[in-house]
Image (cartoon, rainbow, N blue to C red; front, side, top):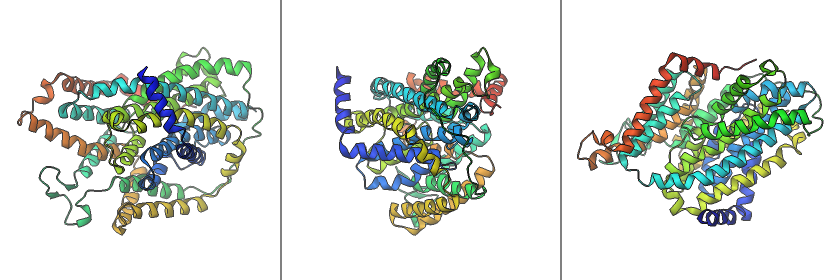
Amino acid sequence: MELFEHLALGFSVALSMENIVYCLLGCLLGTLIGVLPGIGPVPTIAMLLPITYVLPPVAGLIMLAGIYYGAQYGGSTTAILVALPGETAAVVTVLDGHQMARNGRAGAALAIAALGSFFAGCVATILLAGFAPPLAEVAFKFGPAEYFSLMVLGLIGAVVLASGSLPKAICMILLGLLLGMIGTDVNSGVARYDFGIPELQDGIDFAVVAMGVFGFSEIMTNLELKDQRVDITGKVGSLYPNKQEFKEAWPACVRGTALGSALGILPGGGAVLSSFASYTLEKKISKNPERFGKGHPAGLAGPESANNAAAQTSFIPLLTLGIPGNAVTALMIGAMTIHNIQPGPQVMTSHPELFWGLIVSMWIGNLMLIILNLPLVGLWIKLLRVPYRILFPAILVFCTIGVYSLNYNVFDIWMTAAFGFIGYVWAKLKCEGAPLLLGLVLGPMMEENFRRALLLARGDYTTFVTRPLSLSLLVAAAFLVVLVALPSIKKKRQETFVEEG
């Protein structure tokens, strides 16, 4: 009964005219950046982060969430039509989605992707509404020691489930933790690691790092690509899958939704891992694995459902524990702190309109995305022809204005440019920026809870292993380390992230 009351509150918030407009705007922007290759949800949200200063908290978060799950929808359009994944999670969609388009079934492929995404998004939102409150109740029992252990588990999970090199992911997280230590010490009030630069006494702004590593560096990387006209594969044709395609697609859609919902909750899981894992699963259990890569509907429906389910269940650890599971939810924490909202279980009690309004807006957003992605597919095809030489200067100007508006300080622009160059170098070295971002967000929180736990225990370090919940979290973290070190698991992990076909 209480759940229905909360949902009623959520509908009253999400269905206000202002929040509907921002939900539509987020879904529209998400679809747009998903369709345009070379731009993803992370740099887009990083660019738009300063805008949330002037928006109400609920409206700002609804818009940012819409960008994230909207990009999962939009990325499939270019993957199917022109074999260019507009978003990283859509890489797997190319394998069978584009082959269906080449076989004259582009419309059916777009419909399978959109309907699978809609189903997965709705199921994942129901799970979010059902599981978030009990988890939040458990989180109220957490003390500083438990929060520290949970963050250790989160960082190790991000390393284990990172798609790149494990040593590089570890180095990036450690670097993020070190960057998080720059600024004024919370306990003593003494400035540290600021190199005598007054602007660094308050630490490095989260949005500056995010916009540099994901925004500016993305522009530099994409400027290397030749400005080519996109050739659309044939005509879109009918948007209705035939009976055989539907029969093969819907079981994969259900399996992908279940797999994506589970992996989305894990730290570092997210949409990318879910789509690759779903494709691998479908191919393993298929009676005709040789059909994959040649236009099999299951190879399209499974990954598309998985990445959308994961995108929405990744909000569960964010809203219940205040722990970001990926780069996007780390940015969402940044948006919450802009409005002085402390992420964690207290959000449900102190800001119920935000918590339930955001959840209900996801249902509304999924419905909007069906309308945006199927009837308007012709519009997205035209946008594919926008030259990069026009697109990226506009993004650069927008980023610069956004950075300056943070503190009205030119130093922030120079810092963003520096992180942009560093991010470009990291991209060349195949180093992921997401673990750095997680380390930067969780670092100060880990330090604060670590020192608070020691103060409460009067300097006794055994407090982290004598408290049952804290010990169980540390054991789980150690288990992940041992698990990923096993040769068989290491081999399977590498195979999962290799493009097949």
